[in-house]
Image (cartoon, rainbow, N blue to C red; front, top):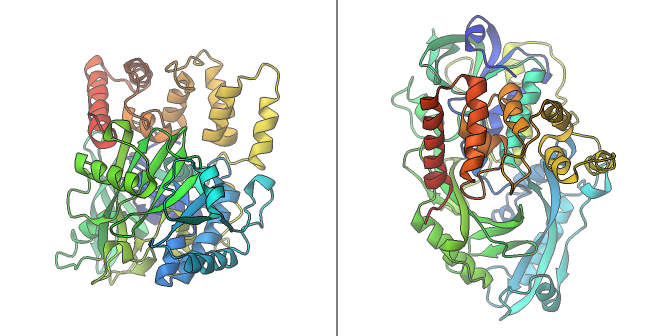
Length: 538
């Protein structure tokens, strides 16, 4: 996948998508697969914003049933199954426990009804091809069984727990990237670090965009018949560039997550004692992922992070709801993002719907995408591209994203993994890591490794030098942060060893032509972001 804004400026597209988060990526994938001429531009790196700040789940949204949002739950459950099918190396089922307490926010009788409805709405959850993707119906556990599963849970007043399944996404950033890569493999032209400065409008019709290449400051004009604003939390800001009187459409709410030492054996759904807000404790990479919060945000969208108070408050809620004894010293990593919710006046943050809207603006050929969530991005894209095709009056292939595997996805992931690991002299740790990250494309990484780039970047992790080269050559990684956080998860458990950081920077410098000053600048910028925005440095 090569970045070429100069060539993009000499091409006229059917559709140009602004925003390389999960929604924009999914739209590009669907449109390219149908045969449209597609461009996508993202002002920073693919998936760097809201997409990278989720709870790493593809879930139906059990709590939405409280607000009677049956349609959203059903769509989410359907899309959860589709993601399992098209990206099995990244999306897989995990069991959840929802503890029930005397006088708690979750009433046992209502939870029973809710769980039965959740099972009913996911009637097709086992319409899958492989055993590891199947999910059992819920069951209610006795207090004794709950304590057996989670020995450290608060026992006072425990009535039992509901046990059910949803799906975890090992890396939302890579899921987003694989939508982008699949789009590119089907002819889409994509570019990160390409910031839209202006939407070109003539005679009340959108005709393209002017973008600034954020790597060198050059400006380019890219022409397109349809322009899609899928910029998430930045949507209102972009609209105001051509409509200063625009009224706010997006309600941004901040959510933070922390990663701690391992707390629970299972995924556990907890309720904040004071507010009743639901949050998760999730197993992730041998640690626990805890989140999320939900508060209105009106700050700098380009600099969203979890501050000390955010983290301390979430740690206090966790200890109060679960009975753990976590302190801020146990926090390895933190991250924050802003949800681009469709604005609904008079509702609390937690009550605002996760629905999405796709609308053609009063300006012809300009479509805006608002709201949604990670799980429903593929379905949102299908509806969005249906609208695009209608506006273009073009005859194209039907939507095929329900059954088309994403870039690197394998048929029967566990069987594929087992077959590869059975090879003679297989490095099981390395191959498991690479296949769970890249799917079948691990073979391309291993080809680079075979040229001598098979050394580990650090002794405490499986990542190898070949992954750095692969990220630059095939995945458009341009900065140290791109590689260390979004192409891999090296820096998502705290600040990595300095030797690892320098090893990756040396390889990138050689390939991208950085001089020593540029390389040191990249390292310092990366360390600053890790220490402030991602990692809670004490």
